[in-house]
Image (tube, rainbow, N blue to C red):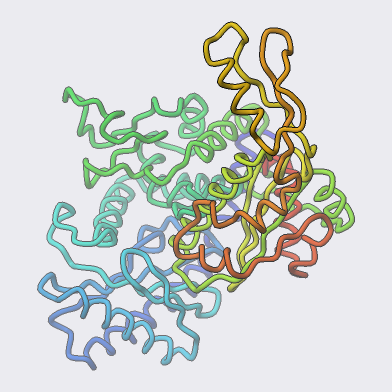
Length: 469
C-alpha cells in the first residue's frame, strides 16, 4: 500500500467527525458549568479558575479516544495542602453530580479521574503561575504547554492532522505514554516533534535516522549558539528541549528500548507502509499454544497481592523488583533471558524466561593457572570446603574443582532466598510474605481474562507489533 493511501485511510479513522466534536464539546461545556458552580458554592471564585488543557484544548485529540483534562488553577497564595484538599473535593463533588464513580489518581499530587459516557475526564489541581519559570509543581507547566501548541497551530492549522497521525502511529507500535509502565512518548512530545519537522512524514523520515544518545531537537534554539554540552546536561537517549523551559527535556521519559522501537518502526514504515503500524492485528488466542510455549520457554511466574498504589509508583516498584529477582537468579546460576509483569486490581504477576528451570546439581569451578602464586592457596581453601565433591585437580594449566550446587531449581531460589533480592520497598513485604511460584500451564490459570491471555501471548511471541499475526 502506498504511503499517501495509508495516511488517507488512517486520517479517516483518527479525525473526529463534526458530530463527535459537537458531542464532546457539549460535554465539556456541561462539565465546566458544573465545576464553576461548585467553585462558587465553596466561595473560591477569587482563588480558582477552571480551564481545559491537553489534546482537546489543542484540537489534536483522536476520534473515539478523547480525554478531557480540566485544570483547577489555584492562586499561588493558596497553600498546597488546601489545593490538594479542594482539588479532590471538587472532583468528587462533580462525580456525584454526574452520577459516576470518581477514582483518585496520583501525579505530582492527587487528582480525580472519572468516566462520563465515552469521555474520560481528569480533574487536576495546579497553581496558576505567572510564567513557566515559576512552576511549583510539575503539572503547573501544562497550561503553558497548551498555550504554546495552540499558538503554533493557530498559524499552522494543518499540523493538527499531522499530530493525530503520529499519535496513532505511536499508539499502534506500543510506545505512546510517558508513564513509568510505558516509558514512551507523551502527547506533548509528539506535538513538539511534528511542529519541529513540519509533518508526520517528515518526522518519520527524520526519526528513521536518529541515533540514541546523539539526537537533540531544540525547537526554540535555546542552545544553538551556546558552548554547552547538551548531552552531558541531560544524559538521555533522546533530548527534546521543552519550548517553554530550556532546562527541561520533554523526552526524558523515553527509554532506550522505546526510542529504538520507534526508529525501527519508522525505517520499516517508510520501506513498506501499512495500516498495521497504526492498527496492529489482534492475534487469535490459542490457549494450548500458550501453555506449550510457557513450558518450552522455561517460564516461571511469581503471583502476589499488592497494596493500592499510584500507577507510576507501583510500576517503579515492580521494575525494581523484576531487576532484583533477576540479579538473585543470576547469582545462583540461573540465566534470565527476559522479564515482564502484569497487574489487575490487587494482583501482580511477574514473569521470567530462563535458560533452564533446573540445572545440574554440580558445577565446575576454575581456579588460577598452576604457575601463579595463589594456586596453592586455592588448593588449601577448596580441600576444606564441604561442597567440593571432586578436586582440586589440574585441567590444562588450571586448577579445577567440582562443587555441589546448593540450589538446582530456580523455584527453590525464589522461595527460599527472595529476602536476598533488592525489591521495591513498598511491595517487598508482600513478595516476601505471600507468593505463589508457578510454572508451565499453571501460569495460564492465574486469570481467565482475555486481556491476560493476550498479554501472555504477546510476551511469549515478542513479535514487532506491526508484524504480529
